[in-house]
Image (cartoon, rainbow, N blue to C red; front, side):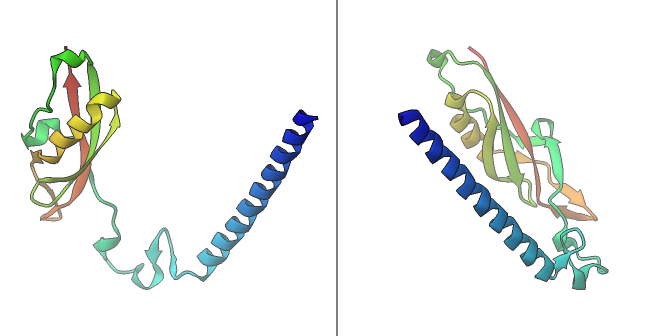
Length: 144
């Protein structure tokens, strides 16, 4: 008796969720049809212009070799944790990291790697003769 009740509850929840998703998708399609932003994400009025504000941020790849200042994260050998932590960073026009978030590695070391990455500085990226903001990765190795 209990199992059939739970089966009915799950079936009902599944149908309700499916209906909500269908309505949500229909609303998104209607919004997209009425939106002036089309043409691959570029506003139609600006599609012919050379407006670089619509461009995505350049990616610098792994930035360890381009670092002009790369502080080491705090590490206590008593933790006995080893491994690699990969930190995604956003870099401003002067080369200073202004945002960092660990995306891979031992969880106990991620916060330490993020703190160190936020203090890092890398060579600025030049695009079209101007320094630009860009993203990339800093990799930290933790060993015993």
